[in-house]
Image 1 (spheres, helix red, strand yellow):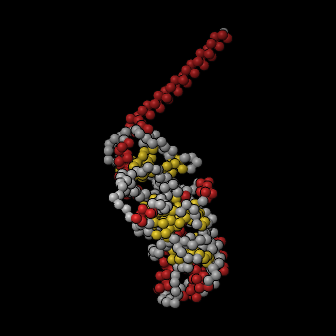
Image 2: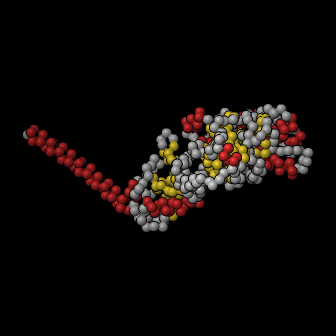
Image 3: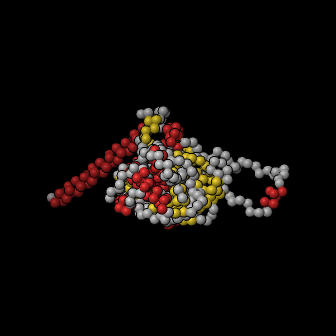
Length: 451
């Protein structure tokens, strides 16, 4: 009797295991069917658009991922069947107003790649990942992350004498722009030029062959920021002869002299490159040199704007005896062939002097120009409704450079405002506490600063 009961339990357990196995098999069949239906339907487009996430041109960071460039977008798709070529064609048409010409698209399987050659390789056709690569011999890295920036440089430099653009902007409007850069393309190729022997050359040219020939020129891409529309765009492709050794350096960057021999950029320039230890620090913070350089340029644009407003206020108040006012000239971001991102500006001859540092402390030793510098800082504070203040007033005579912006709060919406030299309320309170309005402040009808 016990044997019969034992066999019954054994059969019951065997049947239970079999039933469990069949349940798993049915579940697997359902999954295979769902996957088959998914793959069968993935090549058709029910709507007239596809959802696209644009990514950077190359990977970055410890995870080696392609960074997201902007939000997801609905891209019009006119074909019935979903194909790789159809996706590229639709994306090229949709994004051409943002990236310009000279690029080709690449469909990726996700934020870590790889590139897809067939539609079956796309994990989820409901979200297409795509990047744009320049049509040239080396890749361009579009990195998207937050940044930190530079502060003071004790040397004589730069800038192009151009009046600042007139617009009203406050600190909360000048977050780092996330708009992708429009890469300019070289329209001339020198590879096809035949090196022919000239029929004749001058005696001076013959003798020149016995001397050192001028340095090889470096091609750099310039980018500019428009404060009116808060937008970045390509400016120019410029050829420069750049010194191998820096002529000066600051806390974060080194300054190199450069010369453009022709075109509208002809003349002496200064390129500021990040130091090796600075680049390592930027990397550890999950930031990029590209966005670091962008923030420096954007900050200079705001200082340039305040300087123009300051000059206009002098004119409106008919202060004929006021004398010269300050100027900040245009600064560009540049990309070097080494894929380094730096800033570039006109070289300025003269004796460098710092009037007010980034702590808000007056340091100048020239009475008149230092008083005007104090009035300018006071002016920037009033015109921004005491939300921010231009500090680090330094340069050659009235030609200023490398400003810093101090804000009442260091962060807004979890974003750090401006650059590393932003000492925030400390600098503002320090200047306010020690500032005594002078004749220039009173001539501009500036109210007394209160701590």
